Length: 434
Ligand SMILES: [Zn+2]
Image (cartoon, protein in one colour):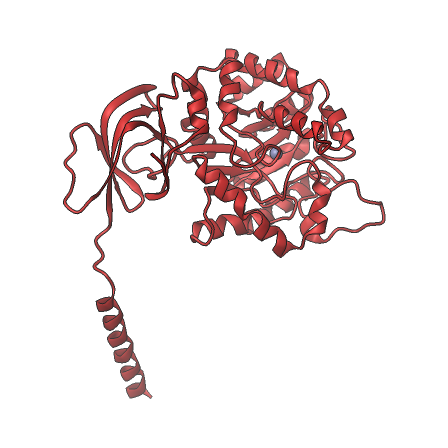
């Protein structure tokens, strides 16, 4: 028996030696990027003639007179402007589409998983190398997509996912509009919770099953049947339980909130960000500033909701919810920017088609931000909101080589970000146009 074990061990050692001899030598590939202009989002300055050294997916060094190592692949972007990969803090890549959530019932779980693959690709090729994906009707479709991207099976941005919506029964994150005697399968009602302890139970399950952060719905919604965006849903006690329980697992909480009272409840409970923040009042703005809460205001969406309405693609009850909210939302965005509240870039992509996320930049500038502030909301601020400033959000040694380029200077014309020419994620090039 002992002899058998010994000979088996030597056989394993032998086969390991053979397979390593067949592999290519393990020198990590070095890529050098020559940047014409470089927007340093940390200092807010535009640097010229910078060289970026990329090794093993991360930035090794960056500066003006770097020596190019022998054998390095050189990418000449000297006619372009380089920026960190963009981050959208409010996407729904793993959901089937906008306007009518009940369409989810017409697709199997497997169909849903395949159908969302193009969403991920379009987002990455638009220059968004990371997203915080904030909920999905079919629970864990987002976890599966995140993992498929990380494994290289699917092309897409790095995803941080919620796993499911935590919502009251028949609330803003529930699949509503069904006959009362219809029973949904578990994965389509996974996040329903109706007390602080049920909220805690859901968070414990989601944390165990791969959520990176927790999404709660504090008020009614626009794009949900039978919902009223001006109504409060989760109570302060339930929101407090959510934040407390999420923190036990090292997770942050984002709260969907339109109504002023729901926004304030969520800020007081200690959420990391308010999603939409549509009807935020002066007290809410002061509270957000005091607590350091991010506002993630999707002010471009209104364009897509109204465009879809012209083609009769938006259900009438959704349009009724949306009436008068669009302009108020944008006015409140201006107020929040002026007050100096922390702002992140979130589009609610899925309401608008995936891949046109960057159209929101021009609206953020139109409603009060400088182009630099708008860019920072989608880079350094977004990374801070994710708690990942050590790896994301700016181009510094040790951070991921998530790099995009545009022709021209987006600080002069922020709309240039709608036409990204070069996309690198973790050292790998996904797009390179002249
Ligand atoms: Zn959303």
